Image 1 (cartoon, helix red, strand yellow):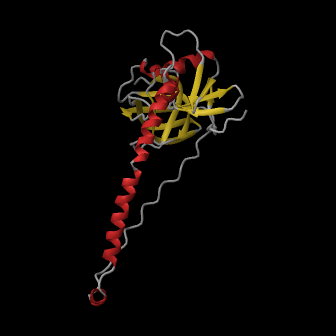
Image 2 (cartoon, one colour):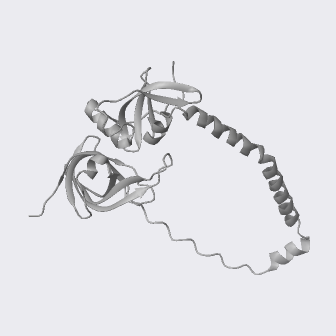
Image 3 (cartoon, helix red, strand yellow):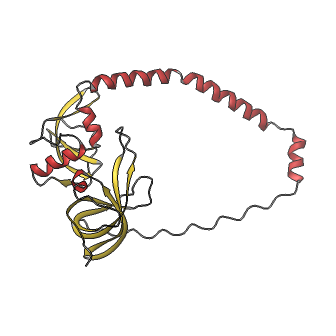
Length: 255
């Protein structure tokens, strides 16, 4: 059976083995830190309760799951976590009832819009002599057109495979997560560049995962690592590129 609701990933990073899958699920909060193996997960929506496997990720905020028919689907890890609750389907029913109550109040809104439209029509029927007076009034000079916006710098052609990189920690911050009560922790890097082939990136960001927290990074630390880098802007920050799943990260010590 083909599942029509699925959002197929254009590209994604599949887990190399069960150990990598286990570590990523812990970072997302889908498994406890003490878990020694993964568990069964279920996708629940519109009356469905489908078993699924977590097979990879697009980035730290987008997990990729596979259903029994081998179809792939992109989902936020926090949303998938909520689906594992035993009462998740009941909560959906309550939310649906509340939405129905909101829709019932729409006729009042329509009546208000109609009243506003009637006022607008009355204003448009101004006396003809008033229109003539306005036509004879001296015209004010039109403001000069705004200066053309500066041309944006062309996007870099980023390599598709994993590359070796070097960067300096600029800031630790958080961004809103619409699927969770907690904000997502992220790291913003400056002086980011690919070492082979040589390419300057500028600024980039990554999730501040539990794995990275073990390194106890500080602002000003320069680090080397291997990763995939993609064009994905950080929410509410002018940072255009994202570092996906950095591995083999090491601090660069000053000589």
